[in-house]
Image 1: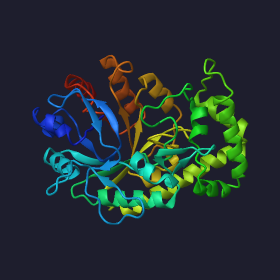
Image 2: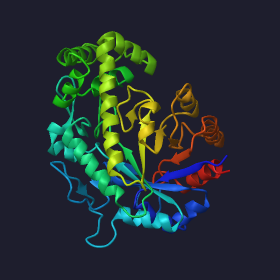
Image 3: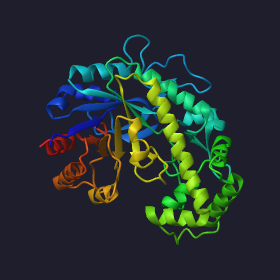
Length: 395
């Protein structure tokens, strides 16, 4: 069975790749497509690539294309790497991918944007006790959705682009975090969900539409957070599994309020994806990053496949920091996959220590009839690792 093998890259990776034959080398190694950021957030990356130093600090909340004029109160910031004239980094990436015979995906980070959140705190996620998550624009808010729609419309207009791949379009909760985040409590799914619930005015209205007493629910969530964080013991933590967290939240919040929160999230995502599909040309595919657990609040939307499968052309399920055994456990019992679905892996120790681990990924892909694998991230992996991974996954 033939599987698609893709890779994530940043524009500056094209410089060091040129010394190894450029994207054509990836094509000859069996790569089928590459994903470049159209927009991205900050980071401090250890980059084991030649001639670029070892530690790189990324720009925060910028685009690697030239934004158009169709934005409202929230406007994107172009990267300082965009030249005054000539091709933008994204345009250059698409052109090089096309010349190498590779499909190009515009990896578009939407609502994870700290500078924008700092400038517009009223547009951010607000937790039950009123804390504003400045790195997380709330996806239920009209001005945030208009910003996302305008950005995706701009990205999708690039000639030669195959796919717009959307990340961070959901509730970027507590666990994903800001820079230098510190806590004496490591959130399990239960605590992370409570810390990640948004109670801004638009989410309160959405909850009210689910026949939820949103004021009472907010107070209940706030009380549970204080019990755990203020009155708890940092040396005596519990750690609940996903299912245990689901069951405990149902008990502590009440079945109707808890499920109302889940439905509000689903309706937010489904409504926004429907609008996204409408602004993308039919010739460009829409891809979204998904986590299979409805409690998840991070770079991927926490949704079951069947809630969004009819609205997208591809689903990417990321398994960073997970063993192949953990991956297999997550896929058991999944339903409604339907669309072209790929798993994304970050092949590094301690999760990956032998070629057998990579073979296990291929076995999972074949067992669930998935479309293939995406490798994260060629700018973070030594070249010998990249060669090893492609060698196993394409054999």
